[in-house]
Length: 189
Ligand SMILES: [Zn+2]
Image (cartoon, rainbow, N blue to C red; front, side, top):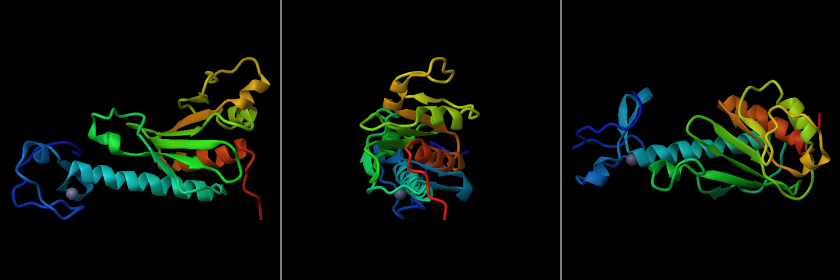
């Protein structure tokens, strides 16, 4: 299994940071079983590790989609409450160099939340609806549920768009769609 279990960790060291566990209740509860290694790590170390993996995933997805962007800014995780250790799994706000819109990306319990935030300048909402039509996931305009849009309105272009990606591959694919929705589609060589 993977996850929170409490074992006797005396004399053991965490695979990630190489340090052991202090004999306090707080330190002792900081345990995580890493299934693929069949080994124990600090839960806090695991959170940092996956956080950095999230960052690399988004960074590469942005680059591969042909978007130019500033260093992603860390923002609080919008899924886990601050009382939960996993709140430390950062979300990111991305400033795009060729658009007035910003992106907000981050991990929830099972999915990556990917969002073009509301802001100045239009998105192509019609194109977003079309591109994501066959994706059977939570998605839509930020302020209006567009999973089954009826009446088209140009106001929709002023809205934001979000989608939940169930895998890293989907997150990368959706970032390419986002580029198109933002009118920043990668130029074909
Ligand atoms: Zn550790």
